[in-house]
Length: 293
View 1 (spheres, rainbow, N blue to C red):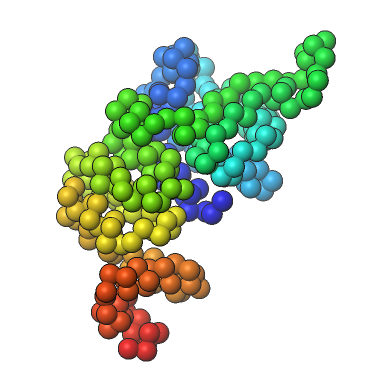
View 2 (view 1 turned 135 degrees about the vertical axis):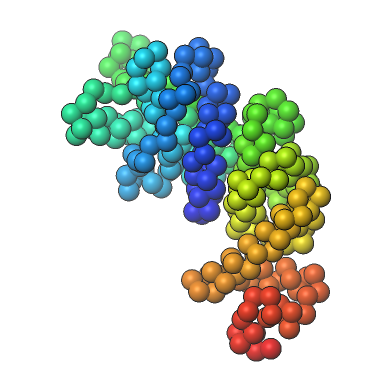
């Protein structure tokens, strides 16, 4: 899966308040009720090695649970389709965290893995023991087994996310966009409603910065036209329209510098569809020499 999905995930959950909001609502109540969220701390570490990197990325928080330290690993499943080896990959991931404990000569710290998946196909990956076919009951005690939290966004309706599941507007919008990102025609129609959830948040400086992250993701992951994104944002915040334009400009220029001609071509095509003249396009992106205008 392209890196911009991963980058968007990390931007969402590098914010502690969003991570706490998400964790409170996806962990079983008997666990979340005993977490001391005042000690929730983003760790500057990843336990993803080269082999695991093709499967998921992680954002790790430490926290105290009944006076003992634990780790909450928020994992983003890279694949857009089910992979039945997920429990095995998670086992390897947890072993990586305990290898770190060994190297640091510290006690082993429990890990609670939370996996977020937003692919089109519904998925119930099951337990590690379920990967063993026809496992005799007397042998099951020799096979390691563990629980993990698996969040398939398709299990939630848009209405659930908007009204019942999360609290922070930025988290609601992020989850709604992740859930619908592979359905651009539908997403384009409901962008107004999604952005409207952040009407108060987008008046703040932090809100506008995160809005830029959302807009960038939309440009990278869909072909929704620039003017459509602007029209969805402007009723919520006029500055958001400016952000959408400058983000499009920056991505275009970065695409040219990095040789990302797909990004460059798509943005140019969007402008042409909106009947922007070649001269104005050249003026806008400051590449008149490339267009020959």
